[in-house]
Image (cartoon, rainbow, N blue to C red; front, side):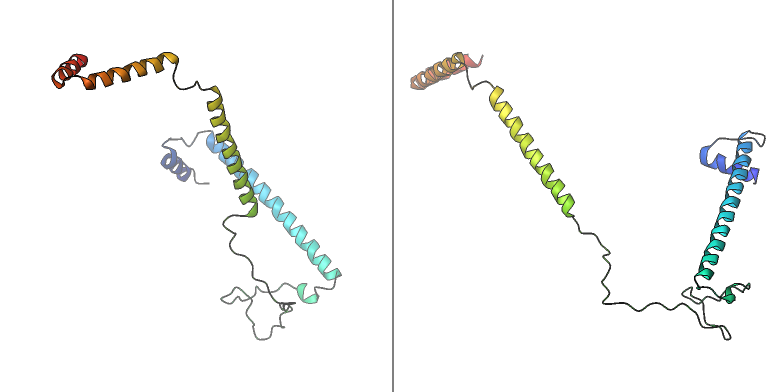
Length: 181
């Protein structure tokens, strides 16, 4: 663990300067120790599981004596498959032929699934019912158009407007000028 590198990294990321004697470095060291111990335990578990797998494979007749001796790592070709090397036994792995016509795998999901379509329909139904409920409530609780006094005032104003139209144009202009004041 390079403390100077960690200090500069913390400063670049956060703008906080920490000292080499800061307790945070003790926490980093503790974290490294716990991580190393955990990795060692996992490696031991993986080794034990792979040895158990080899034992089961031998018991089932899948592995022969060729797997007992340590061997060199295989030479890989461009496809990361072991390349055939002169003197090596032929590979035991061969892909099984297809049992029938191979169906293509769907690579894209439909734009709207049936489940989503049902959800959209339900949402639209709820929206329509909510709108009808609001309009019905507004119609039920709103007051009718005009009161009797308002209707009488409008009728009187209509009569006055008709009477003003029958007046002499000169008098009509004077009256309208007075009403504007």
